[in-house]
Image (cartoon, rainbow, N blue to C red; front, side):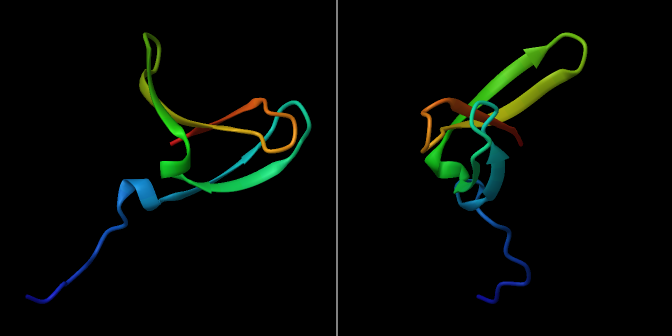
Length: 64
């Protein structure tokens, strides 16, 4: 079998975020966080991945 094009697995996608409390910048794999499905009546569905800030332990939310 020959692979023509290989997509990245969702859990391997890399995201970047900034903590709103202490301004720490982080880069993380999606598998390191918790994916949340938020249903917003105005905008439809939105998906976020949430990780804990390594500095102050606040939640960092990144829209995916």
